[in-house]
Length: 479
Ligand SMILES: Cc1cc2nc3c(=O)[nH]c(=O)nc-3n(C[C@H](O)[C@H](O)[C@H](O)COP(=O)(O)OP(=O)(O)OC[C@H]3O[C@@H](n4cnc5c(N)ncnc54)[C@H](O)[C@@H]3O)c2cc1C
Image (cartoon, rainbow, N blue to C red; front, side, top):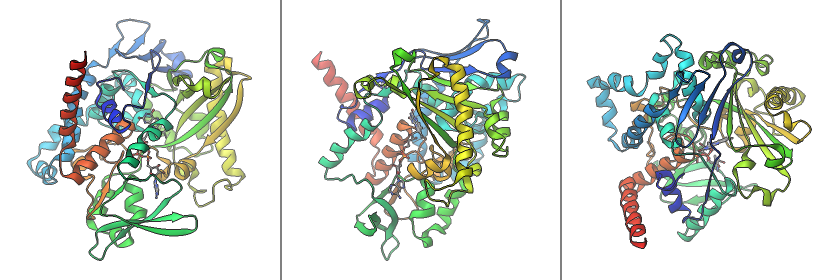
């Protein structure tokens, strides 16, 4: 989110420059090897800061840099949106010309093949940094996805000043000034179709009533699965094109969250705005496969990796708003199946067994936290666990997968990328957000740009480039 970055530039436009970004500490990401694996290997941390990402071991020769993926990321940044602008026929003609295998050799299969070289899985450790950014293990994702993320984060990591709610807070006035309205607690029950099968509005739940809102174009940000499996009428769900698109993708990794409130400021508790990636294995692909297929009773003792962050430390306004308090979030990968049996039960009434299972994951996470941050002993005010069902309820994330469709080889295949686009098989119905590009704030923003381009039938990336040049020229003039 450094000035000059494309994501920052788009956000500046939609928030009229009112959203401020605070840089995170350096290093902003730290990978920690824990458990038996840490005892077996030499001390190792992976640091990421605004100038480099490097694996540092006791021997300086064992240092891996991420400069190559960064360079490749620059290329991918331009190629990925292009795939969506290409005619639908392109991926089909690629298939028949036999181009994809060569393309995929570069774009897709580097990680699965890297596993096969001697000590490949330990070499992959540094790359697996991004598991929490896309929710897919390296063997199942593409090198280009990774390169895109490295390219994004190599410029540094930032946090919205005032917290993430500021993003919506500063975007809403622009929507309203353009004649739009933003409604909350207004669940869309379904997309309305006219007699010709074109989308013509939405049916919205208002209290116990259903209100129909008619409009010339319907844009769904609810994700591909919610839109195609729940929001469009039954007749549309069986359309061959809809079924074909759904068959190409699957929901991504499910997540369990632990939200912790701490007594004390970041200075009292000696906390940094660094993100911690705690790994209990160097072969994270194998460890994850093993973990996800375990019975739920055993899983909490075998968590292969954890993400720990202190959001309060990232926001310069936090202490004014919440004096003497700090916040911590822990994310744990999950199999949705472990919680599936309670999905029909209402929130808050899922019973003792559900609470017990949740607590075992909370306790397992907290024991790691206390080992790594012993200064927090006696400082915990409250702890709340959020299961995949919590994500399903609050984020409307199918199967508790907050990053939408899995960023696996099938989804990132050029054919899928070019097929799964903003324009749906239903006239006047468009998709936007993370499923159209990639997950994350900037990924979802790119999805919005692609969607707007499709509706307006013009390439908004060109408009953005022209606007960027104009702004630069104005800035130069003012100097
Ligand atoms: C704990 C956590 C931490 C994260 N950290 C980061 C981070 O540091 N950086 C980053 O870039 N990304 C992060 N992400 C990922 C990021 O939040 C998502 O990738 C991004 O929000 C996706 O944006 P979206 O607009 O596509 O979808 P969403 O943000 O999921 O928005 C979809 C919206 O549609 C609404 N909706 C769904 N169905 C209906 C319906 N029927 N009627 C009405 N509304 C409906 C949902 O309520 C939701 O508000 C994080 C995610 C999580 C869960």
